[in-house]
Image (cartoon, rainbow, N blue to C red; front, side, top):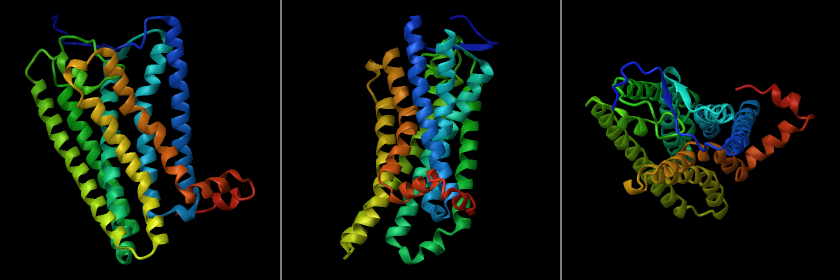
Length: 315
């Protein structure tokens, strides 16, 4: 292979080389992006503007919505622009930015979902100590610690990936994805990033095990609750989180644990869409459909008579 020691741009995988289908892909991605953007922005606005939702659970839900906004904004706008302009190119700096921010927001997803599991555990298993453990300072510290750690984690991945000498600039994906970039290496430096990816798998597995153990304890506590109404109320706060975690695990398993024999370009693209776009699109609906507090707050937000009072609410 030709040695590209000074690559200035990468060539991404296109959805189609037919102009009509490119326009169709642009329209589909535009609709998806607008829905995901609107849903997550509404979640953030409702939580910020309604003081009744200024609790740890909704504070972390707001962080999850910010993460979803970031994830979908990293990949979809560039894919739309390429389809509209009939191009497959992304600049070297643009590819670096995509890798960094995609890893950042995906890592933040793991971290926030894990913290939310801990929040539900304390609320259900130790309700008398909830305000002491999950006070405002602790919540801000956990969220800030998660975002700082994820920034360092994304920096590590990006640095190790782009320290590689690439022998090709053709990425077999519609955005700059690390697993699809490693085969482009013409040196053994890619083994560094492979090691980082293996370490990442251990961290993700640890988070998943923590969530599973947490919910085993939560369900054990729910079974001991004498009040059926209290059990249903506690369970209703867990179902959206469990659904989001299940969606994340489901898409990740299909994306990364499928047999190598099925790793064609089309399959890679389909699964990338599933894990990079589907969760940010569906998460706002998952949380809003089963949450009466969010529905009530959203109704007040859209009601002009309540807006001045709602807008004046502060943390």
